[in-house]
Image 1 (tube, one colour):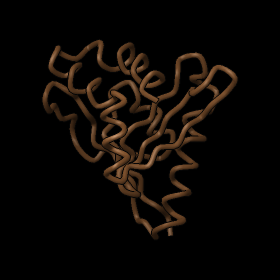
Image 2: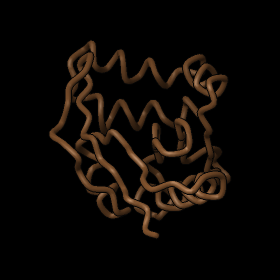
Image 3: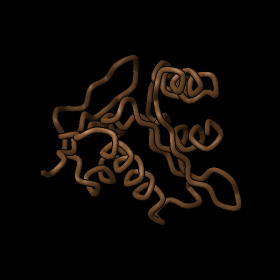
Length: 140
């Protein structure tokens, strides 16, 4: 998972971050960090093709989209949307949720808007990482 996520994050998100932000963002994608997340109950789903893992989505709890990365070779082919729909449906099968949240990067905000998320505040910077708080309300 780390090998699929890290190059995308480096090229599309962390390139504009200060050194501290790069280290924080990429440090959360190491094999050790991902294993620790899973031990804490985060759920990860993968998309694979003949080349290996081409997409990763991670959920913290059932309602917070924590990671979503698709390799550049398949971006724009619906892999991210399919991963989201799978994770969303798995969460909804477990709980009757009213909303999902995500802290989006600037580059991913348009994608999340296409999924139905909307901004709930201004971008925030924490430890050098810029994130846009977003939410998706679940219809009745």
